[in-house]
Length: 342
Length: 201
Image 1 (cartoon, rainbow over the protein chains, first blue to last red):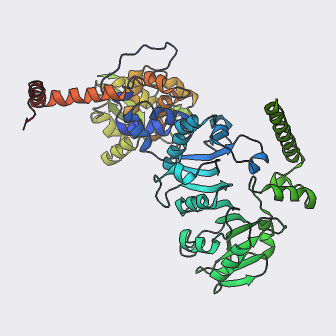
Image 2 (cartoon, each protein chain N blue to C red; image 1 turned 180 degrees about the horizontal axis):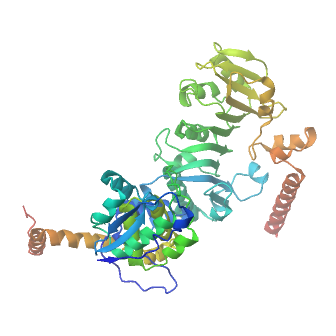
């Protein structure tokens, strides 16, 4: 490390040419105080700096990979490599530390977005991670074999319109300290909630903390029935919309609650609650619905059967966006057909 | 032996008439002496432990030789003690393990660290050696801030980072310098290759 390359200096560049004389532990102290972007770019300078950066874990508040199409269009048309946006927020309420990177094509995704995402998933503890399905792609292949089970340090995971195998893949990779998992299982006819809790997430065996949440949208009632059958010896209360079971810890119960309002895919909330929690306290659990997780027919059902609710991000403007987009699609199809005929 | 009149004792004695303040004397490796208040010394875990272990009284401080700090020169030690005096009594930050570490550089510290890189390097080194957590915090933050908004190419210039190839070449050179026989063996190998022989061993 001692040799110094001959480089021409930018006069305005503030330099610290003594860097290479600092011992690795002090270099590491400096890196710990770098912002996320500097840390990532320092990795690209040399093998030595990369090793130093990679030797440290760090925290990120929010990481979201999503399509650039506005909601609710991207709930209907999943995004491809050419229209993705990666948003990284280092700390809560700190817009100065926000990074937005667009992927305009496949090369950009594989050269920039994916390596960055892999670096984050390997080295960071992420408070909120949102990952969306990518058209004609599979997250299992994208992430490959690089992540052993229970290796992702994510506190709150949101899988947006992921396929069922992708959902199960992420659930298996999340560490046990994950506080909440929000996924949709619209592609799964038989989401194994009971088996998931017992085998993979091990809420009962590990005496999971109160507030630990797993939320899933499912198109069938099978999940609900399965859960009931799986934990029939533990059931305290059961009706058509909720099941409450006891755990090995007398102070904790697990509640499975189906969304109160009728939907095509009724969201299920599974949450660890205190055994003293009154029913009225979890009334709101059933109202949950995620953004971008509802299929078109369900979205339209809101227009005819439900009032728009801000908490769901469903409002008149989002409906107008959808309507305009449909009109634009029809117009562009007609125009294309007209041009082809000529 | 010169006594550095760094503003390490600029305390209004009249303000605290009852309690007599305790000071310690330290000497840098270039024989410069400093008087530092007991409260300021608490910012340095290393020095604090040292003076506690010595158990000096006020008379001892005056009568015995100054405590020698062999590894740090007077110029650096003056900055260190100026910093300690300014921040005396402040709570020492506890490392909660979170990264990135959020560090704000106060105005006083920014002015104190408005120094050349050689001195900044020594200051970081001294903060680490004397275990002054907050001084290490701000000095490392100053170095970290230099990376902000830079491209990898600019970062190479900022920190004068050698490329992987240059790094490899340097390592090879260092190895060869350490073991001249290795170079001879390599030259012999190259010579045999040129002659067409492939049975070196």
